[in-house]
Length: 504
Image (cartoon, rainbow, N blue to C red; front, side):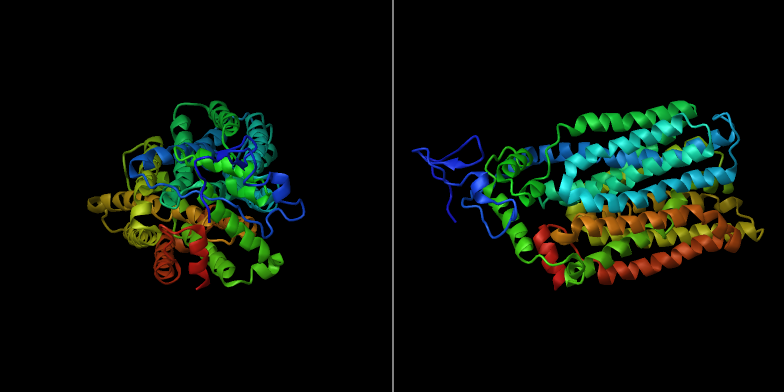
């Protein structure tokens, strides 16, 4: 392939011109047709990028900044998840002005994952038509309408509808944000950027825990409703994904987008050409969607995605996080309920931040393995404590065990099985089915969330609290074997290399 010579310059329309002003790359309309935006065309020019280690941090700065903005969608999801923890007691105390029972609160909490299940297929069908950025902006509408209904509700039914709408937006963000992040990131920092989504989720949960300690129900809900407004304003300064522009045949905009993310190296044609060739190959090999799901990479990606989501939800993460106050109180701890929930939130945020620092150094698989083993040990000890307590053993001298186990569980979950499954969603699926496959996995995840949160109390009533935690221990043991034998290491690999790995 040729490189640009010193007498060649980039034109304002995204084409290259030589010294006498003639185009070296044809204008956009001449390169692509509307019927085949990718086809067998290739970029005619590439530029060899100089490797300047001293500039790498500067090069990555725009990617970090953009990811922090985009993953505010995860923060919105976190506020939606965490709202019921402080709001539940407020609702039962009559702050809405009408009677709300404990069962009502349970259904209000459970409406969120039900709404999220509806949002996943919505995004899967539109992400490649409307674009990532446009969809993320559009999704602020149901989020704002949902919070408005929650704020001004005059019945439990209205609150539930509001929760479904905010859940719809949250579920949609859980599909589209990881996909966008994986498409803009250099492979060297893709893991780090991929963990930002869960970092923002835990930050949103902590946000509701802290404000819920000081504000009433109305003030807490108003604060949560402000976040989508801020997100809407910030999203207008974020570029669209270069992958989306290329899929629509818009080379000029794809170059501008990629140049923004690869600063200070303005020359990006080599990477753009690799992206283009990958999309062109996908277009040439395009088959019906159902046939695409029968390919080896698609099936392995789907099994992997569903597997990590199953173990993410059924190893006890939601129980430990959302019922932390119950665990604190059951151990006889003198820590107040507000202080305990805030403590849990702080540990989760700090631990997830640690994950952002080490995921591209240690790898995904090893962090998942450490995480699931530690969670299994912690749930075993918590179950053992409650077994001893329920059978009238003296547990006064070992009251620290469930508290220590709770803290270790949250820390190791937040380092591994908290952020990494979301990051894998943007890595493991073939380009042709990425939107649909991601939505299927995320929809399944939200169904698992609904089951784990709605029926936890019923499970405890049926088999007691200690057996419930030992059941989580059993799931962790199964998860350990799953990670060892089925999860590939994707650290440092391009998206194309990951597909080759899954097809082996």
